[in-house]
Image (cartoon, rainbow, N blue to C red; front, side):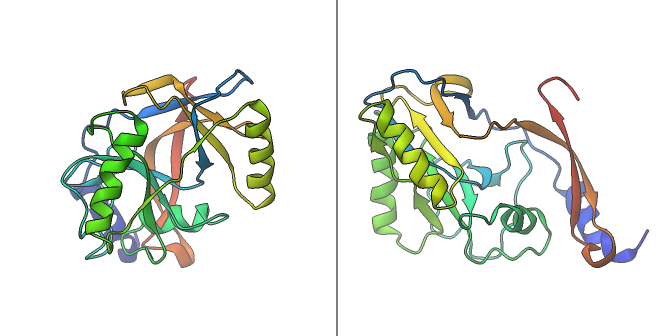
Length: 223
């Protein structure tokens, strides 16, 4: 084994997965009427959950951001995406999963505050108040727009995709946050996609020695 690969392997051994956070998961929009729901851009980032003390991956692995990144984070949970910008998913994913990744330009973009009270807008307002008092926090609120009708969704989707975005998310704002697959959180995309669970990490080779090289994923069918 090349010694340069040891930092990555040691990090995985010293920081094993904690209990996976109970995250809300989206279903797919099938064209149903969602007038009055909250609509936002579907960010092509890395799902992350701040539990009030640690920043965790969907599988429960703690991210290791650079010193100061978590300064001014609130003492209560946030659910969102580590995101650098459109078309930056691969670079973002590589950065946040490497031992010494480049986190410049990456922020936690939040779409819900799980333990706050009230509807979605009220929960997000709790974070907005915090950010006004802590403007240096590496946190951004994802803008939410009330849905007018189906045409509003399709026209917005077209605009987002033309600008290089991935798609949209629709949320029933009066529903409380709860973990698991939810009919009150819907993803809207022109191209279909699938979700999987990361079950193994593999060290990089060659110029990527010492970094995360690949991951093994398992889909909902166990493959």
